[in-house]
Image 1 (cartoon, rainbow, N blue to C red):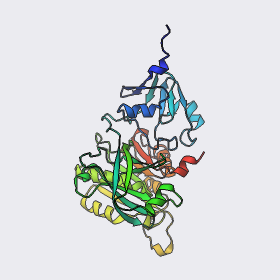
Image 2: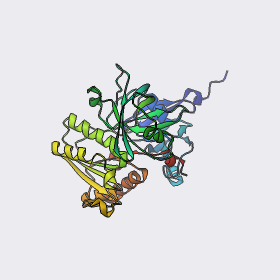
Image 3: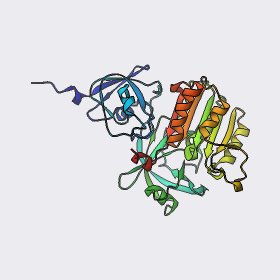
Length: 354
């Protein structure tokens, strides 16, 4: 009688320097196996499009499924980097990932959610509040996201824009900031036929974008567009927990109206002495009467912080903003690579790119 090949029994994945271990079964990706076993590896899109889950392979062999070259280039793959969201182990594997969370990850659950309220924050951003089933609170870290499961099985991801403690306030629900992408299957519905009381299906929480509270380093928060949603949740969480680490928020939009909660953010800075806010507009027109900072939002940070070696950066928004920030802050300002925490908002169009 021959023994079963080790592939059927699964391969052992070890994450250094934490030493945490889990088993990847069959054709399960390394990330899916980690999530299933409560090991908090960093990730974003889960689709091989954003690169948030990229880490160095110290030993072992993997096979990569389809992914985009901007998330993992051929050169990076040759140099031993892997995308855990689309890498399947073909032997025991040892990875280096300093961002693995020591906390047990919150359980991922599917649940119905009722539309509680819809309100336009700008011409193309809708605030959607979702009511969850009574007696089944969703446990999550401020900054994480949920996925809508559409009728055809397609999924759409949105960050929760409020911190967990706010769910205890009656009538609050989960807050999402949804930008209208004309022609988008889901967002056309949100901006068209969606009504209060509609029932949707969601799954979560997902994502490794949340405040690392074991650090006392000052913080730079970088947001583009609706990437502000999880940043807002982080700010609410810091305020609630009386976390007094200095934090500077850089929020970028094409026009001033894209900074759709500007007044809310200014109110927070008035109430939180260690919080600063720098709005940045890239494409102002004369009638905007914009007198603030202009240009690329990620470059505004470097104008103010020549040395980021003692900081943590939390970046959220369009992949080009997040990727440019990661590259430039490490190369030009000495930011340690493992102190850059990101959530890139990949759209269906982004995922379709080569």
